[in-house]
Amino acid sequence: EIVLTQSPGTLSLSPGERATLSCRASQSVSSSNLAWYQQKPGQAPRLLIYGASSRASGIPDRFSGSGSGTDFTLIISRLEPEDFAVYYCQQYGSSPPYTFGQGTKLEIK
Amino acid sequence: EVQLVESGGGLVQPGGSLRLSCAASGFTFSNYEMNWLRQAPGKGLEWVSYISSSGTTIYYADSVRGRFTISRDNAKNSLYLQMNSLRAEDTAVYYCARNTAIRKRYFDDWGQGTLVTVSS
Image (cartoon, each protein chain N blue to C red):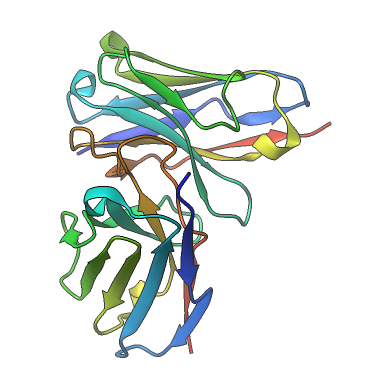
């Protein structure tokens, strides 16, 4: 099973700042099969990024993903008030289980 | 508009059973792979089970294998999760979610979730 470790656990920033979230895998994630999700309190997760760097439909271009192998990054270039939430990475390699990181909470400073 | 609506959650005693349903609309349900995921209170996300569009391929997380059964009825546009021998650690919000890319199991669309509480 691939274990995903996200850092930091909590990130405190102000609107307008740049956010950099990290996701590290315990072994190489095949074909960059990594996704990022945003979850707000009381809501279901929302897909942001798939294939490590492809934005899902309707996702603003201030969200970008990068990385390969075992190290992946989600960048929010300029934080909007609605971006403060919990972010999860997920790997979907060739066989299950499809695992998630423990999450990074992005909070307003 | 894609809609996934879960139902069937509630309070159940340890060792009991519950059947969750997910009603799909806004897309051709029979063409898509589906999943169940869960989130314990205040915790992260856990994938639970996958079923192919035809229902012929099924996967489970180790934590539920042998206790949970995923199924679908394409004629009724519905996904199910039969949960037996429930434990306290199964307490969570359960989500159904759709895959849109073939053999790429990220989760494009999610329902709003249904809460399952296992407690005496």
